[in-house]
Image: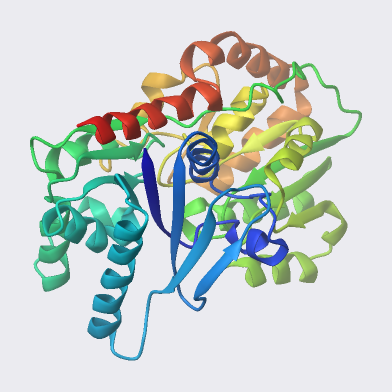
Length: 390
């Protein structure tokens, strides 16, 4: 079987390009499926890039990374040239299956409709701009609806708490196979670390892109309120980067509490496990869903976790409520997030036994709800094989 991955520049790719060594950070679903296909089959990886073109060898992978500039001076001409370049790679390498991420939807549509190639469309959760797609009346939305109705061989969507099941049912061609898949966890790293005591400082961990929809601003507001008003010690670790990175850094620097924060941009996935071990409480304020890979990792470590409540109107986290029992994580308000988070963290500091109770509860149910990454990626690999044989 011969597979070509057509992707946009995913999180963590810049470190791979800089060192030319396969030590990925960021999206574990993408890098793990690349690793598996690279190990078991013929693989080509094509990245549609904003700036870079050409190819590089990456130590640790058999496949080269081929970069094609996504944008040019004249967009329609650049697009047609890119279609030809990608098609040439498909023909030259005798590709059987094309695996395309959602940001390259137009290419996925063209190669499935026009060139009749087996295409797997990969959707990493449902974003807000996808929810009202059928209601919008503009050319771009009409085209997107048309592209999503392409004859894909399979559509794989991440179950991250966003309304994936509803969206797939209402936006794809009826006879297209589709599946929702939860993220996995690294069972080689998981240790029983609950009942970790703290003397006076409660260590709180936040992992996620520094964007509004990830709730980083609410987390920072709550942290500064606690440090200003609570007569107790807290230490906050923030892992991530994004458009709000400078803003977050400046607010921390201009506060009196710079020594109470640790801000980290990139962490290799294997090194991030130490951060879980060192923390007492893990907080996610992701407004799009609470089943992200980082959240699942935190749960796998048996951490006391704080997530947002589900939202009936947007259908966000209704699936999370079904998967994670309500008494296994702490849920807080979406409307009064900062105030509720302050109260919950202060209460946990005053009553550490609550932390230990939540840790024990999630440890009792976790393995019945989630698969290890090896098991989880095998499902996706089997889907690629199924498409190849179809």
